[in-house]
Length: 523
Image (cartoon, rainbow, N blue to C red):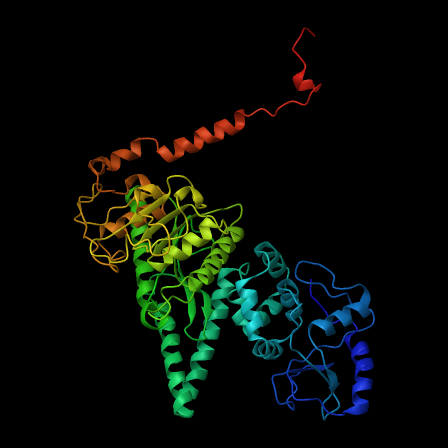
């Protein structure tokens, strides 16, 4: 439902009468004009222009359908409380009001407030409230609420929101991924153009900062353009330094298997976005090939996720960034789950280094759940045992390479590679592939787990398509992990069938004196 500024002109006029008596001009502030269709040009700060309401306008509602106040007067008062806080007139006689947001405005209300604004108004609003927009992205309304609200908008309203506030709607869970891609690509192009101007015209300090930011933005652009044989979507973007981005390979709306790659320390957008996305594309290619090789149907999608600030040498010893990252990865996974409700894909997370610490935080706190987890080069995490993680039994793997100085340190808690942790070992030392006979390379050191042709990447690909039974672990059992397994029942499926049968066999306990408790007898 469209939210309108009910009777705003009436209430604003009453407020303005008092203000105008003492000050005919508006103090410099972010401002809106009432009853106008264009941005106020005479104020000295970003402005938003609000349409005029009538005495019988609909009450203001948030995107969840909740009415803010009751009746048109309360609707207008609520709107003034949420958006403008100072009302007056500019030199042309138009009413204007401050658009700074009070802390009391919750995300669901804030998003609904933006619907009536046009593109220019949205740009000004975002400019005046960047920190609040970021808060909504990090702590969004329920995905289902956003999805329902977005689906009820007209095409014109959706286009305006995507163009005017891509910083919000390009990152908001519940918005379709294709729409987010459209918004984020436009934002990326807009900021690249603006930063180029600053880099070439500003003073030395500002020009240097702009040049560094331009490198970050260009890296994201390069990652989107490389190897266009893969369908790529920019489903997350923050263009402020040091930047955040998420690029999907494949169709997240329809893929049967979705794998998310979570990076660790020292991996930044500035230095590694294109490389990390290439790894994601390699994984997509390998998983697709394994589906064909195993005569499996279905499709895959992978996500190159540098969606949190990864630590560098100045802050890699703490967990503050892991805390932030755990919230953001949970938002991504939960948003995906909600958007695909009723058609759930098999979701796996592959976490490298500090990324394993990030992912375990979210899974141990049960803020998200996934179908499979693989960790490589992990410095440890908060969980003492796999049973604490929101992952099905038997679906956690750990890979540890020779000469990797990070593994076995348990620096951030428990070493997931220890026998006590209970994860499945994943071999990364190189061997003959028992299915194809191909010679697989060894991963050595901290950064070679995701290289094409390695035993490590081969195993990750199989985990991502729910074929963990083929994953090699370095034992004599590896020689039996051939295509002959396709003729055998999958142990994981057997466990699930037993659990389902047990659930169906449970008979509720009878209340004393109930029909169920009565002894059987002749009719």
